[in-house]
Image 1 (cartoon, rainbow, N blue to C red):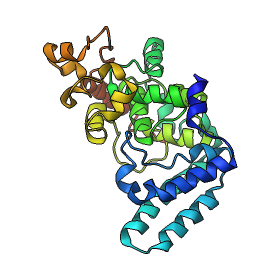
Image 2 (cartoon, rainbow, N blue to C red):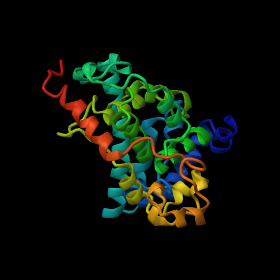
Image 3 (cartoon, rainbow, N blue to C red):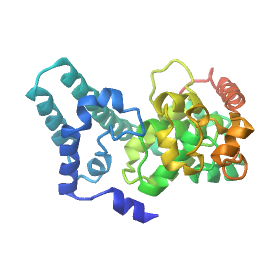
Image 4 (tube, rainbow, N blue to C red):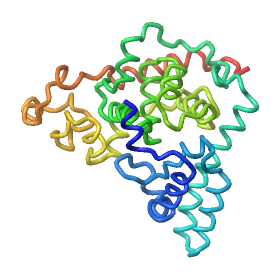
Length: 291
């Protein structure tokens, strides 16, 4: 397990500054477009270095501001602002944890103390942890996490949504697994992220957000390259079915060497049915005071 971490990360201040320089020389210019594509090296991957203090947030902030000032242009400034907003979210997470320290283990939205989470979920939780949910982009993310100690942010949201919304497994189970496996595990960021996705944290959205992992995969991994890398048993499937292999005709599955339920698991959930159950569960606490 740890071999993948050693191959992926170079700890230390020198490694942090190399990663920052690589951001400025590479993906930052196209960051707004590339940041949501998990098959691309479109993000900074500075989070582990920031967490361990190998690079300070002010250092990163001023380096990106200076990069934008080198060649003033709308595109360059917009790219810098887009990345800096993510750094601001990191600081907001610290603000929340400082003022609401109980949120490391309890929901910010107190209504969720009464949310009807699933109770017997051990098998489903283990399938999620091992990247065996039968939902390709979720399984790809969970396997990337296990192999490298990192997961793309878009996929973090999808894996968390499947766990908390579709499976209705308590968000703390996911937060604890990420804490154990992420090389950038950070109490403030982890808490903010999981509570945001679960719907029980700081969120201005006027609705109960439930991601459709198939549609998200088709949007952000349209050719299936991310799934093919981390779920190689599906690599020969055509694009039309890479994010929903259970819909593929038998002859397509046979040509790709895929047998649902054998070489690759059947999906744990039907998204539409699971979504309806999640909305019903939320309706049961909606009218209660947030406290």
